[in-house]
Length: 131
Length: 122
Image (cartoon, rainbow over the protein chains, first blue to last red):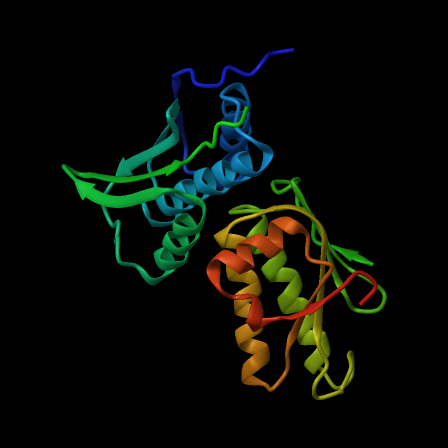
């Protein structure tokens, strides 16, 4: 059984996947495992799972329909970054507002941007170190 | 009880119980949200059909969420859509035994008040 490694830099774990909704669970499982290794609490891991899911929603529902890349890492905070081709991506789409609201609730910081033909979204979930 | 579990969404099981309650088990995410929405629409159609369903004008759509282990904005969107449609007809949507995961998402999005919250056993 793997033991947790609190305080360690972990990752990035980079996953490329087709824009298939059911694969969101795969990312959540990977993020849960990484969070557990990093010593994240159950509640913090729940926040990580939601953040990962919201990043996936934004890229799959509003992206170009092409491959999505997600990066998961722990470096002080849990950092999830996602990107896809930006063709058709509307960062101000009303449906994205709910995504943003949820991300605001579960993450310490988040952002959505379109740069150099890529739609990019990121979020960080804070980890409280306990004795 | 009719089931809405589909081959490509095996992380969610949505069924309509004999008393008309929509019973959800599993994870309501990007794959599960549309499954839940289809079940809600089916239940709404029954509730407004004078032949097939209840004619009670304030009949609730009741959704049992006690078995939901994960929900994101896709799942919330399905619930909010139901709440908006119900509100437009002077009805309401009841969420029965919302799991902590559901309660948290409602809380952080400020949408709890859009639903009638029912405890276990409603």
